Every structure is written in C-alpha cells, then in structure tokens.
Image (cartoon, rainbow, N blue to C red; front, side):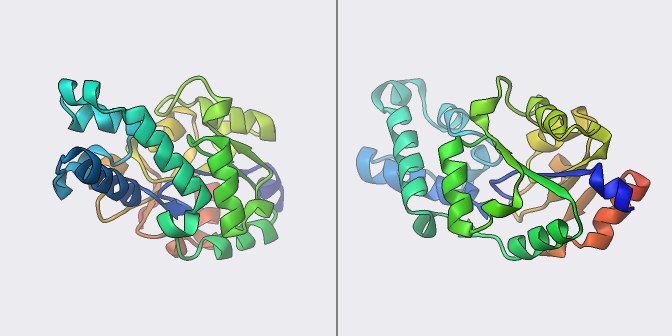
Amino acid sequence: LEKMKSKCAILFDLDGVLIETELETFRFYQDYLKKHHNIVLSDGAFRYKIGRKSKDFWHAILTSSQRRDIDTAKITNLKRRLFNRYPARYIKRVPGVKNLLESLKKEGFSIALTSQNERKMVISVLRWLDIQVFFKFILSIDDIVHKKPHPEIYLKAAKRFKVAPSSCIVFEDSQDGIVAAKRAGMQCVAISHSYTPKRSLIDADLIVSAIKDISLSRIKILLKKGGSARG
C-alpha cells in the first residue's frame, strides 16, 4: 500500500466539496434581481443553478429580452469580487475538510485542487480556509480549454503528477464533474447534497452524504479494489 500511495493522486474539486457556494450564489442573484430589476425568482429556480456556471444559469432563468436589458456579466463579476473579498460573509465552510486533508497528507498521498473557478478565487478561498499547504498544485479554469464534463482538467493533473489516471481518486459533487473523472479513467467519490438529484451521482464509485464521512479506510478500499463501493 505504501508503494501504491506514492503513485496515487487525490484530486479535489472546490465548490460543493471543500466549500459551499451553490445555494449562496443563487441567493445572491435572487436578491440582486429583486432589488435592482424587480424580478422575483422563486426558490424553485435554484434547480437551474445546481452544477452549472452562472452564464448557463442566466440563460435558463431570464427571457431573451431580459438578457438584453440586464448586464448579467456585470452581476456575475460583482458576485465574484464580493465572494473573493469577503469569503466569510458569502461562502460556507464544509465540516471535516481540514481533518481529511491532514490525514491524507500524513499518509503520504499527493493532493491537488482541480477547480473550474478562476485562480484568484481559488487562492483566496484556500487562504481563508488555511488549507493551501496541503495541495501540491492548483489547476483552475485559467489552465484549461475544455470545461467539464470534458476530462481535460483531470488528465492534466494526472500528467503533472506523472501518475496513471487509474491511480487517481477525484472528489466531486456534480454530474459533469463525475462524468469528467470517469472519462479520464479515474475513480470518483461523490458528495451528495440535499438538493442533488440522486441519478446524477450514479456513475461515482463511492457516494457519501458529507466529506466528514470519508475515511482513510474507504479510500484504501478504492485503491485496492478499483471502486464500486457505495456509502
């Protein structure tokens, strides 16, 4: 197992895995539209934000005339600046993150962060959480051409670690992320949220309800058996 660990990489997504921003982002947009444009978004519109970038969210919830009248790029950039500058106000911490990272590092695993957020945002959040020391490197949207479900970000991480994709375990929470990990030939641990459609996680090798439920023993089982554990 010691030899296996030295050739195994653990890759973490950021949103929905190490932090919670999905609902927080939706609430920000919901409040902004009501205050500045007198547009009331029902709570049910949250389903259009789950696992999707802001650009796709705007396209789904606004009419074509509303999109012409409203500068959605400006709102998105405002959200990014505020979330980046005031993470404690806008971002929710996920319990158990630091404990898991400490355990993985102590066991000798190589760890990287693979996020479709901008690098500036990623670094800001890692500093706020005080966990930047655990990651050998960061890959962000600035480092890729193709977004998930394309496997590019995960294949780049494996190449940088000089390990086979089959020796990587990915921590994800979205269907696109899981599909990207599996297309890359990697094993995937999925974090299930209360708002996540269960069918969107079925391709993961291990499903847990919270990151604090992930133990080293479960990771070692994935390494030994190659997946298909459910939890």
